[in-house]
View 1 (spheres, rainbow over the protein chains, first blue to last red):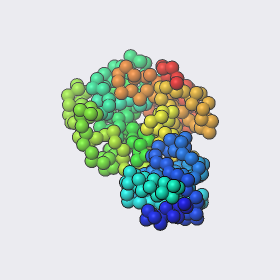
View 2 (cartoon, one colour; view 1 turned 90 degrees about the horizontal axis):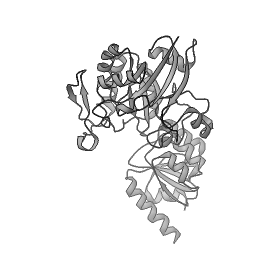
View 3 (cartoon, rainbow over the protein chains, first blue to last red; view 1 turned 135 degrees about the vertical axis):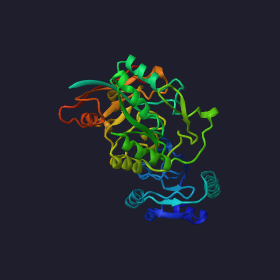
Length: 114
Length: 253
């Protein structure tokens, strides 16, 4: 399943990094502590967070994450959007809470992989 | 030049987690006992206790720099210091404007008191002070500098509420005059594990919430006068002003 499939199925907004929408998603990771994401996320995961600082792109790039979903209507800062474009890392958004979007993503990924 | 022993991160009775013994006179007496020449008052997201302590400080021959420990949207704690009370009034208005209107529950967090020099309660602050402002670290840094203050991310070695725990690493374009290490670290031990930051400017302070922790960590400056202007010069290594050393009284971890 690609980031674009998830975007379509969960009705997500694309804020930046559309060039990376064809990335393959292997799983999800949920955390708002960037030090934790740096330590524990894995390649190919889509990351759900409320952090909008440009460091999220550096960490997603470093860990080769498939993309980022911002929750509760949070929008990326201007310099975050620019870096996402440069790094081709899709930043998506939803008005749902972390709990709701995580549940939907979990169901989607596990249905696809059964 | 003077050798100034400075602890620039001290909380008072106003911080909900600050001990009720952290009154103006008690703080100054303990600072004197510990041989400090300069202290800074840095409560969480409020400057309302700075002036009373500064006014009392001449009795103890201690310089008091007014400041605040600001919680950014990312929940990174950052210290800001100001040259005068006009700047302090500006940052106070900014803080009150951007702190969400969540009520303090004193049973959970403790009381948030503004007291006078005789420990009479002048005001109890109802808005919870330990929560985060609704602005990013970059926006807060820009505001502090626009007002004329200096900006120092707090206890960056700690696994909680530090710029590194919250943002993974220090953004390379962050405009900070220095970085603070807690009483559990030192510049040598920190940079040994964090080599990209080995050329940064470091200060150490106690972050005391209790009297007995005042001066548990401190910085020695070589400066002309115990003022913020001189400290800024020392941080920039200008005109012969400098940081001599930083210290902690605890074992490093």
